[in-house]
Image 1 (tube, rainbow, N blue to C red):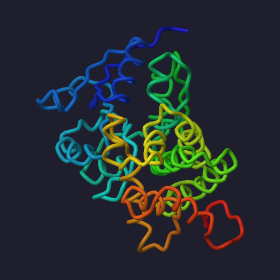
Image 2: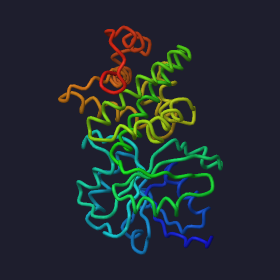
Image 3: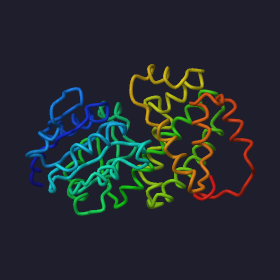
Image 4: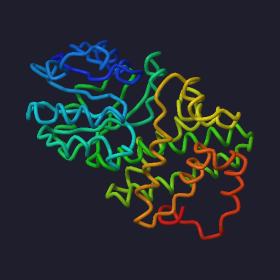
Length: 313
């Protein structure tokens, strides 16, 4: 098989995830340039001559970056969005924010069970590239897979993003559950109902149910809701110890997207009549309106009902 021509990749965002991706693809032989807000300067300078632009900033940084760059983003340069969450102000996902600011380029989403620390150690992982233009996704799948990262593709970027966002809330809830030492039965029950709750939001926003059970949904949930490498899971553990959200964030030392995503999901749920009991209890705990013990009891004492995969979490 002939050697692949290296890609020229520009990564915007050098946090744990952006830095890990940059190193991984550099190790594959691609040419890498990166930018962080701490660098200053104009990130648009990195887009000239690039084959792929990767955006891996936190959700809070997506809207200002999209406002500044979307009108100047080259129309032929694919944008790979790696930001996970639902913006609390815009009430939408990262890719939708880029589109709302006028992006004309091919837009892809990367998500899945990809704990940055494990990838940085050379451990294997799989993720999904989601794009409505499957030919673009297929081309980049072949160029970016390799080493310890195997990529799959789908045509549902919105559903992929929503699943990847909501699993952070469920991972935080799982941390609370384990921090309270409620046992394996309770954790399994929580995650099963959490998956159904993720599906309510995913389908309600127009995503494909299939994405819920793929790498960005169930796959990412299994990784982040059971590992202390997950910032959201650790946040739940610390909240169960009695720390407040701010103190937990300081202890973790990195952005925790779950709390903001839970608030955004509840804001979306209100006028739509969605039932999101786990999101409700997570927000009650982080706001100090409920203790972790009271939140667990509230979930157990909800009205009994028939099991439904998506419509009745």
